[in-house]
Length: 441
Image (cartoon, rainbow, N blue to C red; front, side, top):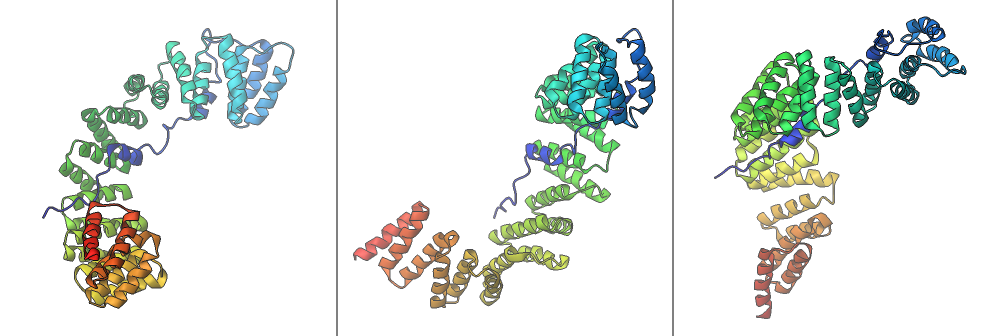
């Protein structure tokens, strides 16, 4: 008998979402802006003598006390003469340091409008847009800085990320390549390039990049998960399993990696291994672990592998976990499959103590009584389930079968009609047609 798939494998798009960047590329924006407070002679606008005298007083306090620096600079700005583009730039830096982004933007924009080749003003304006997630606005700023001669790898990298967020993946890829040319060890730029390669199904390049990232940062679990899913996208399940096993062996795994490894084991019918991994998930993340173990046990029960299902459910005892209603129901299903009806009813009784109107449990109880040939009790249980909307369909069919056995054909027809009013199927319609011939006779 072919073992059904336990779970569908995580699609690459979902895997990327799960294993994606924990945050944007990290850039010390304040450092860049503070370091730009020293002017480049002959390449940038100059201040007036009065502005420069004030600048010398406040430049040392811009990073330590930006609010006070802003007050001093604003006092100069209030004079009749308009400030120079250089002074506006420094005031923009002070506003940024003080968290007044709107005023910082206004000063930077005025500065580059009056002095279009002011390279660092373009960079700082781009950084302001980048740090406020205005990536589309950041792109022309970083691009202009590069045209003006900026060759800093950070500028290329931030341009790449902004282009990527803005949807221009081709240009983003080129910018990331430039950034890595100047800073080959930067993981942020490699991650950006990796995401673009995966989205473009360039799996060979993606595999090379993720291997490099794992080698440089083996403790970052996202890279192991991404690598496994790259392999799965090419149907290389055995290799993906080995990669995840390696990560587990080295202690570099989170719930996501363990869950995927458990799913791979389950799909390959490695039952003890799958149970062991899901138990680890149960220990670190009870909600996910319970869901995985119970779902796995249900699959084993439906495929007739009852001993294996029992071994999986025993993991709950080993972990000291309760499992709740769903575990009780799964144990009842296992006992019913083993035809251990009294034991199954005990599990169901525990459910009904907590949830007296649990439709699924009432149906299971009715089936247990029916199997023991206690028809009146079975009927009562099914009738109770019939009044629970979620269980009405199944209860209708069960009651129809009982009425058919008792030769109450008209009543059987009523229950079948009720079932068909909820869900129409060829099998039930055929059943109804045959029962109606009995009513006619």
